Image 1 (cartoon, rainbow, N blue to C red):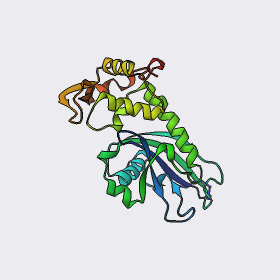
Image 2 (cartoon, helix red, strand yellow; image 1 turned 90 degrees about the horizontal axis):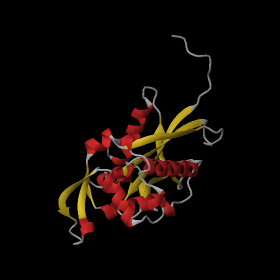
Image 3 (cartoon, rainbow, N blue to C red; image 1 turned 135 degrees about the horizontal axis):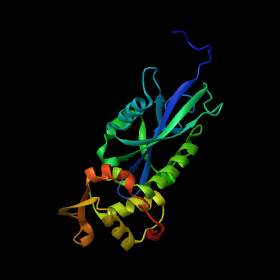
Image 4 (cartoon, rainbow, N blue to C red; image 1 turned 60 degrees about the vertical axis):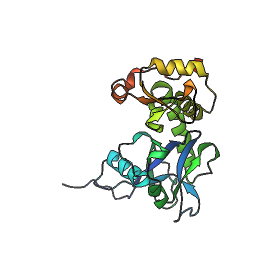
Length: 232
């Protein structure tokens, strides 16, 4: 088969905004670059698309190399293609964000990539157009979390309602009304009472729940206003 009459070389990169939650703060997985350009500065983790890879396959490969995890929740956000965005060579970047439980992933995998968890609020200035990517991803995360229960992707298998509330407060960087939050969450019927309690507390709030994964998958798109204005 003949090739298209176009000889210009354009690279395709995938840049990954990985959000994690440590129980208190929303964090971002960033890499300290040990290569040029911008050696010694902070950037998102990413890689180049191989000629024989579908985009989803490439995204899963990059996430696995970075976290040691498979089947991670991720979404494509936007393609960044401004001329000169990469000073080395013309490169367009397909940007996506991922959600993981910090305590579930292989920390050694991240360290092997020279990557570290950084508090989202205190993140350093990033190279190229990566700051814009993070802001867009955060906006997307907040929009999605208000409509769908994607926040569970950031939690351990068993959690308390106060832990879940702290997660959403971290996502929106604002306090949520405790009673409204608890009522709204329980009304989704997504939580299963494990019959266990958090050993660090003796209060009712310490009841441990787990996600009803079957119901979560079947009704993922059925929940609207998961986080409503009345809860803030």
